[in-house]
Amino acid sequence: MVPDDNNGYTDVFVNDALTGVTARVSLGPGGLEADRYSFAPVISADGRFVAFDSLASNLVTGDADEYFDVFVHDRQLGETEAVSVNTNGSPAGGGFPDIDATGRFVGFDSGANDLVVGDNNGTWDVFVRDRTLNSTERVSVASSGSESSGNSNHPAISDDGRFLAFDSDGSDLVTNDANGSVDVFVRDREGGLTTRVSVANSGEEGNGSSGGPVISVDGRFIAFSSGASNLISDDTNEAFDVFVHDQGAMDRDADGIPDADDNCPDNPNPAQEDHDSDGLGDACDPDGDDDGVPDANDACPLASPASGLDADLNGCTDTIAGLKTIVSGLQIRPSIQHAPMAKLNDAERTLQAGKPKVAENKLKEFIAQVNAQRGKALSNAQADLLSTYASNLILLI
Image 1 (cartoon, helix red, strand yellow):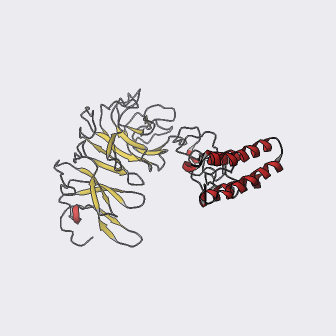
Image 2: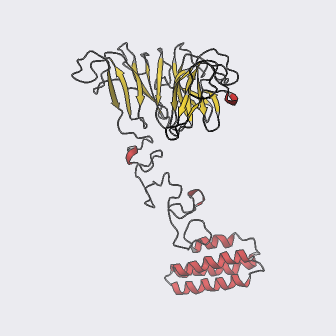
Image 3: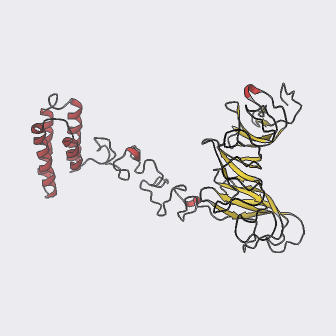
């Protein structure tokens, strides 16, 4: 399929349907071909990252465990890394990978007991590797965090890496698991909840084994096969069937608003406030008043300044109080600072008394005082800011 394929083993390839080009990705440093079998590939949404299982020992340095391991190949950088690694970072065995849309999170199962601290059940578990944080989390646990007494396998991960579906014969992942069969579970990594989904609509547990789950991109729907005859009515074929469990409308931020209707699905905002009506809620909008000033730098993040009337560019409409703050912060002699501050106090007082014309005249006198100190006590930049600010206030009166 590709030139120089001389290893005599099964490899993992990626075909670009647009260009027709096929490339081998089960490669070690410098394009070294694998010295053993590679298989079970899964790929990120953009096609950059490919996770796969391999018995090869030369895909990464220090792979001496002689077990199947899970690897991820970065097609853009041409690099391969092991993800089924122990707490020391060394390959420790794993299989059946699945990868999220971005390639950050990789789910896999493993019988190793040193991938995380406190793994004492002596069985196969399901894990998630965060390739950004270089951390591994066991997800085949009960909502309390306690480990399972049974084997857990075949992970399937949602696009954002939050939900992991898997099958397990453990009877202690949820309460009232008494069917003695393999069931399908979903772990919500953010909520810390484990739920059994191979159940009837009434919640009755299946009377047969279920497994091989796949999960929708948002984690809402889980498909699986089952030999149970009581998951739906009129199941009389006495054969394994395929079922879909609907977890219900997803609400990632648990604010009571389904993600499909939530203007900030990852930030709790039950009131759905959207000050600038741009469809992005105030809780997650980086510029909540759409004034061009990021909220992180905006003194008035939800109050757009009047057009062109924001002399100090702080995201707020200019006010007399704001100008007084600027004047009081100037590093000039108090005797020089006193006169313009007095004009501002007069302008503020007369405006509050309902005398806008008098206030306007006081602001004009303030501008004259500022210009008198231009190039003396005040730099040109300072004088420009103060006079522009005062001119804006006149326009606002």
